[in-house]
Amino acid sequence: MFGLEPTLFFLLFFCLFAACAFEFVNGFHDTANAVATVIYTHSLKPTQAVVWSGFMNFLGLLTGGVGVTMSIIGLLPTELLIDSNVYHSMAMALSLLLSAILWNLGTWYFGIPASSSHTLIGSIIGIGLGHALLPENSNKNITAVNWDKVIEIGQALFLSPLFGFSLAIILMYILKKSISNKDIFKEPKKNSPPPLWIRSILIFTCTLVSFFHGRNDGQKGIGLVMVILIAFLPGYFAINTTLDLNMVQNSLNTVQTVSVKIDTLPLSEKELTSYHQLMASSTDLKTILANKPDIKNLSTAQKFNIRKAALTINKNAKKLIESESVSLSDEDKSALKKATQGDKAPFFAFGASSATGMAGVTDFAPAWVMWMIALSLGLGTMIGWKRIVITIGEKIGKDHLTYAQGASAELIASITIGLATAYKWPVSTTHVLSSGIAGTMVASRGIKNLQGGTVKNIVMAWVLTLPVTIILSALLFVFFRWIVG
Image (cartoon, rainbow, N blue to C red):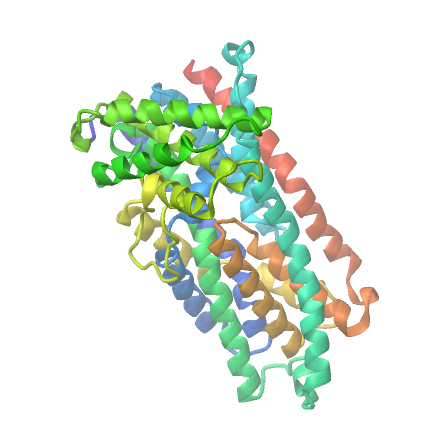
C-alpha cells in the first residue's frame, strides 16, 4: 500500500493507532472537565452526561477547521518534516506519541487534572531538542524548535488559566449580587436533581465546554496524524494535492507585488532577515510554478520544496505585517495577509479541512483523518470520567461544588476555549476549568477555601508536565534514532 515495504506499513499503522490512542486517552482524561458539574450536581446521570459530552466533542472537532492543528505542527522546525529517511521520521513520530500517552495515562491514574495540551507541546519541543543534540547535527546551525511559535503558544497556555480564575471570581460576585434565589449557591442534594432552571443552565454549560473542547483539543490529534502522514508518506501529504496551483500562483503574485513596496532602510536586522527570506522563498516558489505543473505529477522533492517555500513565506510575511517598521498601507497589509494566511474560517466550518491562500498549501487535513480522530475523541470521552470528577467536585475547594460554581466555571471555560480556538491557540481545557473552579471557591469564602493539597498537585502537574515530557520525548527520540541509525 502506497509503495511502503511491509515493515514501514506496519509502523505507519502502529503510529496511526497510537495517535488515535492519544486522542482516546485525551477524551477520557478530559471528560471530567465537561461532565463533572452535571454529574456532581445530579443534573444528568453519568451515562447520559458522558454520551452527550462525547457527541458534542465529536461535533466540535468536525466543525473546528485546522487552525489549531497547524499551530501544533508549526512548533517543529521545518527540516524535521522534510527528512527523506522514513526511519528517522518514524523515530520522531513514535517518540512524540509514547511520551504524550505515558504522561497522560500516569496523571489520569492518580486522578490529577493534567493538561493534554502541555503534554503534547512538551513532547514536540523535546523532539526538536533531541534532533539538535544528535551527533550529526552538533556542528550544524540547527534550529531546535520554532521558538516564535513556542512563545506564542506558551503565552496562551500560561494566561488562559489566569483569565479563567479571574473571570470566575468576577462572575460569581455578579451572581451573588444579582440573584435573589439562594438555592443556586447551595451544595447539591444527594441523589436529587436541582431545580429545572438550574439544571438547564448546567447542561447548557456542559454542552459548551464539550463542544469547544472538541474544537480545540480534538485538533491536536489531527496534528499528530498529519505529522505521521507527512513523515511516512510525503509524496501524498507533504502538500495539499487537491489544491488549485493557479490559486497559489495568484497568491504568490500578490506577495511579490506587495513585498517590493517595502522600504528596507527602517528595518531592523531581524526584520531585514525576514524580508530577504520572504523574497528568496517567493523566487524559489515562482521557479517551481513557472511551468504550470500538474500538482499530482510533482516529485516528492518538489512537493517538499513547495512546502518549505510556503511555510517560509507565511512565517516571514506574518512578522513583517505585524512590524511597525514596515511602511505599507493598510490595504497592502490586508492583501498580503489574505494572500498568505487566507480568509478567516467561518465559525461552523463543517467538513472544511483546508485553509485558503498560501496557507492552503500546508494547512489541510483529509476528511478521513478528521472523522477518525473525532470518533477516537468521542469514544474516549465516554470512558474513565470518575477519578477526576471527584477531584473537580470535592477536592479543589474545602466546600463541595455548588450549582452556581459549576455553571460559572464551565461558562468561563467555554468562552476561554472558544476564543483561543478562534485565534488558533491550543489551550488546556483541564487547567482553564480547574482554575475556574478554584476562582469560584475563592469568590465564596476567600483563598482559605481552597484545599492546599489538591491545588498543589494540580500546580505541580502544570509545572512538571512540560519539563518531564520534553526530557522524555528527547531521550526517546535519541534512543530510537540510535536504533535506526
